[in-house]
Amino acid sequence: MTNALKKLAGAALALSLAAGGAYAQQVLFWSTQARPVEETQKMRDQVLKGFDGPVDYQVAEDGPWLTRLQAELQAGSGTIGVLGGLHGDFSTVGANLVDLSAVDIGQAKVNEVYKKLGMLGTGEQKYLPWMQATFLMAANKQALQYLPAGVDLNKITYDQLIEWAKNIAENTGSPKLGFPAGPKGLKHRFFEGFLYPSYTGSMVTKFRSPEAETAWNKFKELWQYTNPNSTNYAFMQEPLLTGEVWIAFDHVARLADAFNQKPDDFVAFPAPAGPAGRGFMPVVAGVAIPMTSPDVDKAKALVAYMLKPETQIATLKATNFFPVIDVKLPDDMPASVKAFSVAIAAMTGAPDALPALLPMGLGDLGGKFNQIYSDSFERIVLGGEDVHGVLEEQAAALKAIIDQAKAPCWAPDKPSEGACPVE
Image 1 (cartoon, rainbow, N blue to C red):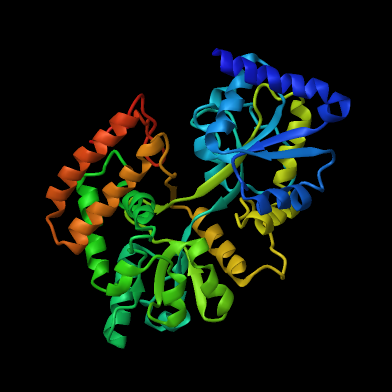
Image 2: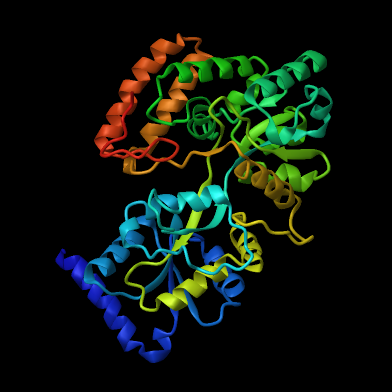
């Protein structure tokens, strides 16, 4: 253990002792989430005020968050009671987290897909899901008349989406599918977390597989019916509102204004499914308890509190992250929240749901990782280059990034010892 870590752990312990008995009764909630000042204050004033006992909600960037946690773990004692973070925040400290399998969450029905993620590949519940955000599809209700016969929006496939987009283009005289393919659009997240998993069951390992070639060829089919202005789009809510686009994919935060301004004009629905499942990219935050928590029983009570329906709703209002349990939302929620919560529940709870986590373990190479997918799109779809040849070249670049970062695989790829393989 380094001197710096020893000093940090010692300082934390000294602070706890110096504060006296009243402070010791507080639960320190150490979190990487709700970091903006307004959100942090709402967590304290609105979300945690109903807990039976004082809670000290403190936030930190990922690096300092992990440094303090590791210092306390190595010291064998500490002041952190409960941890809040994304899935990736917990992935490196799983062995030092309390099993939450026996935490009493009452009648709350937690999303099973996310609950399994919280096991971190073990037989224990290393963290419990806390809140979520993701990407969705949205459509102008004018588009529904061209939906292929018998298609259920909640169960739509990529082939059905292509047929739907084709119907609209042929009947209206212009392509009305929209995609955030502009310089500031989140197109890379679509390829990483939606298209690839849906066709390959993978994000990294099967990057250049025959199934990946099929995925790109399918997207080329879809692109025929995509508004060419998509290469300028960053937020899809704007072209939806103008009517330039009738069907769109984007992050929920980048669709919200359309639903809030014209709530009667739009519907939200899950991302499409492919042969390998309904790939989607959740931004999953969880709550966990470190082995060094000073009062594990009180910490477990706080974890249970975070999953109460009223707490989940308060968290949504405070952070714009959605519940991870089945909950009826009050009538005063924004139109976007009402529409998205139903679509998110349908997508994450679908029998073929296939979550693809945000890339992990890449450090400052994350941007280069994302660029691999964006460049592949530009070369294959916009440039018309040979799919097989592009994927062979890009796979070599992807492997170099993964190897440099020594990043092990993350879902949907199978866990790996060492750097995630690119087959």
